[in-house]
Image (cartoon, rainbow, N blue to C red; front, top):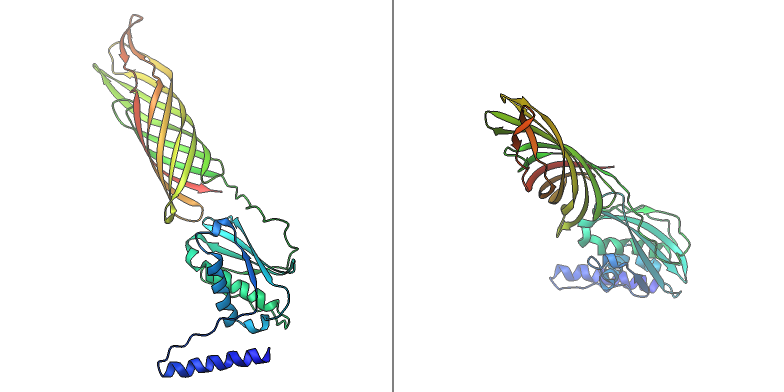
Length: 343
């Protein structure tokens, strides 16, 4: 141990002298500690075992690696993955074992956009655990601040029988929407909606309730006034935009059931009030942008086909209908802007 330490000091002094005369010098990587790293499949795009091994060796040399050298059983590292309650954040559980006995564990919160820094962060944590597990144990160092990460130290656990499953992050999304509907009658209608969605970012069910006000349709010497109230159930699926975790594409579709209220105005004959049922089947693509950790801004533009389109008698003369409101259009287009909050 003393000889290896003196050799390391001599190599570093030689590198300092060599740098003064512009001679390249490469520090030898530490040897003598075997590390078998097991990584979850979710980290395949961010870090590989060879990358982790190189980062571990560099960090071991920079943070007291000489104290971790011994001839005992090899070290084994196990990294498990679970989704954090905070959006775009994962939690890595890092455990170090020697002869199937846990010698240290730390938890590492990591943001998904910090994928490039993950090899160095994991290597530093493993190097600190390996140093503390050496035969000459030193006082535990304070948690090291890593870029975009926080390290929390827990008591060493018993070795897990199998990798822990990701903990589900339950939430309910509530949204408020405003926009316009085109094609119900001749004029566009203002649309207001409230929505609630089940947990799930990639797949969820959404219930919507709202109304369309007001619509006016000129007929003869008078006008037809109408308004609609709707209730819809949609199945929504979504995926993040590649390279932009804050931007998501979603597609929602399902049935809508509505009630249209219509009445005649300014006719010289009797006016009627009518109430009829409408049924639509709609499909709405949406673009969602995350404003904060639990707040989203969504823009949707969809179309709906009418399965039930009633006709309205809006003026009569002596009990005989003389004017009818034409069928609502077979298809309509909706443009909606929504603010969604997750709880």
